[in-house]
Figure 1 (cartoon, rainbow, N blue to C red):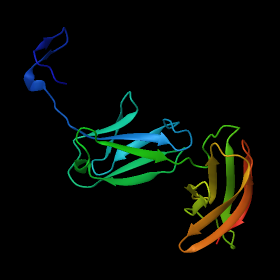
Figure 2 (figure 1 turned 60 degrees about the vertical axis):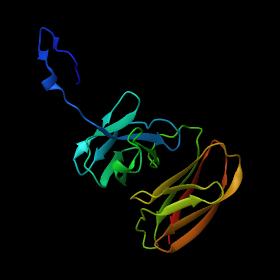
Figure 3 (figure 1 turned 30 degrees about the horizontal axis):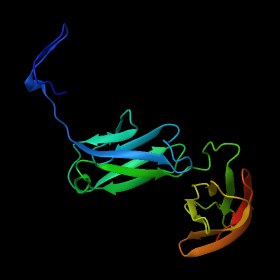
Length: 196
């Protein structure tokens, strides 16, 4: 709160000595990778070194003030999106525009609309153990995601007509390809896929 002249109310008197000055260190702008808009549901943005939660302003930015010099870890957690952690040095950002834009990838449990064009699958290894954190990429459109801890994944497409696509699965040097046909406005289930 910055007040140039003392301001008197029936509750308190504020003087120059009561002035608190903070510096905006970082503003995080989150974007839903599917909709291109603000994320759905509750999202927690934290600065780990300061054990500080961001304050969301009316413009949708998650803001941090007075962060320590050097690399800081910013974590993003949500029940609708994959969690992520980024190392950020706010002093290397433009002090007039310290904005970090982050795309959030939806989890398979994300509430996609009924007319979404999706490809879903479940990965398992030959011993029937589920496989998480496998990189999954639809080669031609270049759409990527990872499998969740249960081995489930979803690829989401926008503005794609009916066509055949190749999906590449990769983890720790192992890879596999799967082909399927996209049907615009429908969900294609690949079922259980043995991987690697």
